[in-house]
Amino acid sequence: IGPDERKTLHHGQCSTPSQFVGHYNYGNAFYAYQHGLVQMIVLSSYSDTSVGSPQYSWLEEMLKSVDRALTPWVVVNFHCPFYTTFADHVNEKQTMLMKESMEPLFVKYGVNVVFSGHDHAYMRSHPLDHGKVVDEQDGPVYIIMGAGGNREGHSQYLHKHPEEWVAVRDNKQYGYGHLHAYNATHAHFHWVRDGNHKDGHSDHVWITNPHYNDVVVGGDDD
Image (cartoon, rainbow, N blue to C red; front, side):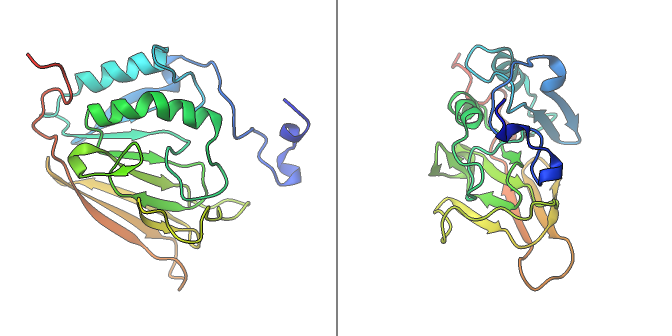
């Protein structure tokens, strides 16, 4: 770790570097649980994510084993976003490695929504398949939920105008998100602003689930 990375919170900096690849590949670094109609999968952006790594192999087996009759919705959560409209953490090494190896699994096995943080702001994408806007059956929606509030302030935009794959973005307000899976086919996501400041806005969207009756999405044909 270099001198710049040793700066502490007393200097207005985070004491943990933003960009690194770790080697912590144990079970509590990545895990899954069921909540109602949702299969939640939590991954580690800072563990090994390469093809064949413990985390990659665990993720693929987890996605293969999802019972869509029991949990029709699959939601993945990890820290560093694959897609960002903000300037602070663009093309970081650990994120690019993870995206290269794991995004194909998200598409193949019909992940519905991907939540991340890292950027201190809010963003929701259109459904995406390797950067291309697609229908909901062909790629997940990516949401950055980093607007909970912090001493460093909001992240700045990478470009003045939103990228074509961005549905909504906001770096003025703080807030939190609420995902409600009403049934096997429809879920509602609502980003709730903290307060009623005239800047910023709330966001909500209905998400439909084309994979609710898939036994194994993207599996081998019999």
